[in-house]
Image 1 (cartoon, rainbow, N blue to C red):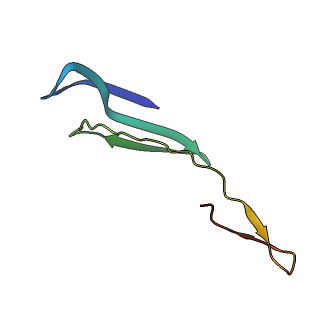
Image 2 (tube, rainbow, N blue to C red):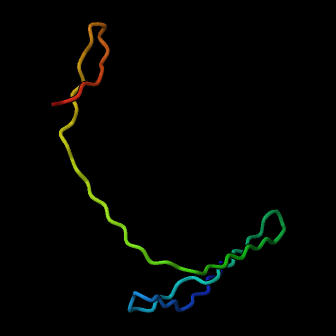
Amino acid sequence: MNVEFEEVHFKHHPDTLRLPGQVTVTIDWNGKVLRNTHAYSDFKIFNLGSSERIGKPKVAAVSSKGSQRPTATP
């Protein structure tokens, strides 16, 4: 695998980033050489936020037939 990096500048980001511009993957498969080339452009910067809320576990109730069924906690 060959990865060629290039400098990428963004309007609203002060740093220059070195990102893959072209990736070439070469394999020998059953005596044949296969090559794929992947080109990358038009990079975008985005932010992603997440949060986690941990609640009280739900309790399973036992029915009259002996199987468990979920019940909601108040």
